[in-house]
Amino acid sequence: MLDRRSLLAALALPAFRAPDLLGAPPAIELFAGTYRVEGGRGLARIRFEPKTDAATISGYLPVEDASYGASSKSTGKRYFVGESDQGVVAAYDKALTPRGSVSTGGAGPCFLALDGRQGALAVANYGSGSVAVIRLDPVDGRPLGAAQVVAHVGSGPVRQRQAGPHAHWVGFSPDQRWLHAIDLGADAIFAHRFDAEHVMIGEGQVAYAAPPGSGPRHLVRHPTLPLAYLVSELANTLTVLSTRDDGRFDPLQILSTLPPGFAGRSQAAHIAIDPAGQRLYVSNRGANTLVVFALNAAGRPTVLQQVACGGNWPRFFLLLERERRLLVANERSGEVAIFHVLADGRLQDSGGRIAAPGVVFLML
Image (cartoon, rainbow, N blue to C red):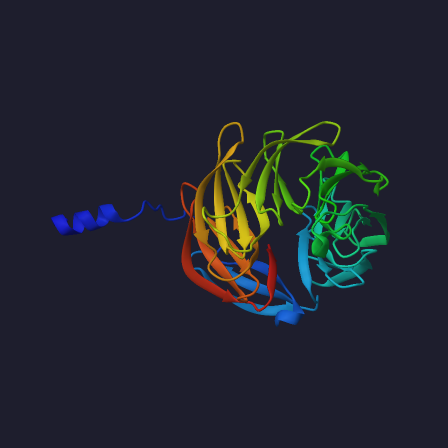
């Protein structure tokens, strides 16, 4: 029996449902890309135990400045970009044996995406403002031949960041007819027609002209509704877009990602959506927060929570839905912060940290 004081103390605690980890694997392997200039030693392999939030780095793969990666569901291959002036994609099999590499045909590659057939790999070359498409072997996923490269054209009013095009994200449309590319320098989303059979793309056409100086960065699609959500780095905004059959987007709503009253400098970074299409997550570098948006039945967002990111400069985060965890790559503090995802989608800092100097992305 609880006495009155114990009962009142229990009622004061925030509602929390322990994540249901029954049937979850005792440990999972993660990969963390790091920047060498910030102390990174390559592509870190991390053994993470969701039941205890314990993690250890088990080794490194020799991919310097690995700023992004993608994995194939059909072949088990993993692909990582090295963000250098001579961009490269490295391929590894399930056993993490190297299976070839290929030039991205541009500088500073920072994002990858696989098409629905898992036969094409798209790359965003930030430094050179171009996108590339690489054919993959249908059996073992090896890169085949040289990349097809298409350059973007455009600039924006923020001269130190937008003197020319800077492709920052790529993704294939659900119907596989388009490769979309977000360009921070050109303040635009470009649509490239995609030929899956021949693994070719067309010239880019503007699918959405973002507000000048907003610096669009990353995009996610709603899992069931004809909507997409765009995070803009320079404006620190979330834009709700309706999707069209012709590959274009129409803006529906723009919201700030920053905490109320924040007056410092900040740059919005990553965005993710849960599989149910009910919660949207965005990170803010500078404000050093994570913002959780609740999505209603029509897919419209409202702010549910702003929470400290557990470090400095949250460039990326990984949502582990089954494990009810969100892992934050805090680049400048050189650590991964472990958050619990509560029943209502809010985040709770577990206090767990994984030391990873220069960490900039995470993937399974």
